[in-house]
Image (cartoon, rainbow, N blue to C red; front, side, top):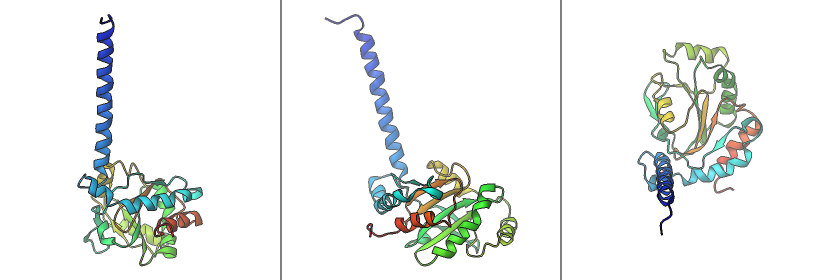
Length: 220
């Protein structure tokens, strides 16, 4: 015999089921974000970045305590900006090199403060296997940011820029780059190892330990 409140219970079950279905759909949507093609094969292509994130995690402390190792690394190799010759580049052009991608602008005070440390990091670790790629997002021409870099004595960073802010918009679409500065450690295949929101002392020993351990092969 059906109890008087049975229809209400069934209605609640329906609401719960719909809620669970919505949650599953949300998770699925997040998974699709992992790669531009939105499929499992693309996500699996970032398995090396996931391993690197796990290697880096114990070193996210001190000056880089806010670094967030990726649990579902994004494939970022299609991100586009311009090089010093004003020609378009993507992160795929840095294949076989670990990249510290930094988004900055002259109107961003914390960005200005961390720029000398990024320059020093490039001086200390930059080479065949690693590069700091600091992309300027000023809307105007290159005169103001280049004058700022000259003024503070930056000499090791290559000048990259995206005055269209397309790079920032693309990263916001995948829940990255909520503000400036944003810095993303990217593996040689163009996959996210981890992300830092806000400034950091990138020339510190703790930052170098984090990067060097993320670059280790198979935990060696």
